Length: 530
Ligand code: NOJ
Image (cartoon, rainbow, N blue to C red; front, side, top):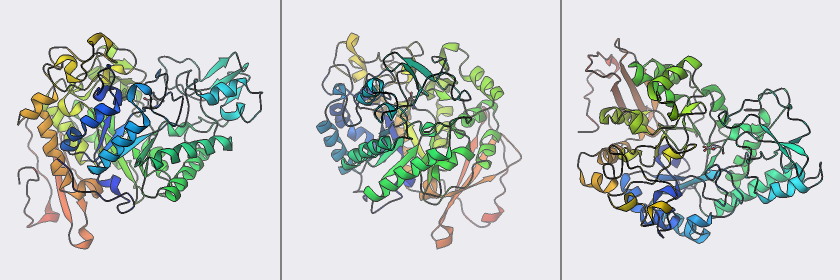
């Protein structure tokens, strides 16, 4: 299927508001040359699958040259493609093909840190202290500076400083020790970052996810997160994108409380989009407690955002299901409920996919997807969740949720013809979630499969602009096991629509009375069945 020709970002500058984003990992999607690693050639072959799913944009995890010790978030060259995934020409071909089918492409701009293998870091450690080359990164003679800063990868790192023997100094890193933080107080760093950004914009990339964006700047006596100077940097990046390639989009990865996350929109002059991190665990909380309160409460705390901005809503992604934005008692509750097996826990989160979290319960999977697709914002679907893929908590780090896409019952789940021992990651093979049981081919053929259900829901969403653009108004029926809200759009121009979304968060049937007196004489129509 080919989508109708889409407007370009210039013609439709708010395209991201009506988008549905599909998040993929090149490495794990499809192996076009059968060497065991997914690649752009493979992704190109599967483009029609993505179009048929009904999404409108693809977010690709980092595919740049990298030692891949943080699965590609440790970049050693900002302007290339990892040779395992193909060439720059392959990527170009893919972007052109995706655009021709009406899909937009979102990639990663990882600017908080590089790999320690990046030539800038190699140069910095050898350069004299105080030189502009050395100052590409953040150095100190002691490891006690910025003591008030939390450690994010708390399972692996003991400090945000690591000693470098060559430089004879400590360097600063908010993530793994092999990922030194760039120094944004050095104007040359900013210039390099903008130049890398222009490189990808020239290639036609429609959106950039700003990885780890709250941590760009360090200042004594602060938490070193969300600093005003960091927002200055983001405004500078936004100004550049608006001037150089208007209509392209910036998406902030700011794992923060709503009032801090909201600041990443600025006055509509920072990021166009930002993930709604606090909403995500509260959707899991609401169905575990059979109570709408966690959702209504966090949305009540969510401030209004500028007209040209949009939240990104998600259930799962390539990282652990982060529980940073909940209280410690809520975290304990969610850990107990969803990760009783301690192997499923990592840092402050849970390394599981949606289907295992829902204990393979199709109705709860649908419930969660219903929330995902109807909450204010643009939904992001993690590859494989549309078929209910499982995970492997025996793999290290977060690899368990990054296993090969399951295409069919063929060898390696149809992901690759390579020797199974040579695969980049072992496919899931257990009886419940293995590729024999869960795969695209079987689900495409089954009318009532999860895959076809997701396709139908995306079709429904596409027909109603209120999902992407409308306001949200909660109804508060007496029965708290029922979550009900209105999504309203365009009432002012006479062509408005009002969508009523009702969810039973409990395990059993519920009676509910909704106060809809505002809609006297209106006739409700089921958006799914007509
Ligand atoms: C955020 C990414 O989502 C995560 O996968 C990565 O490990 C960290 N940034 C550090 O780069």
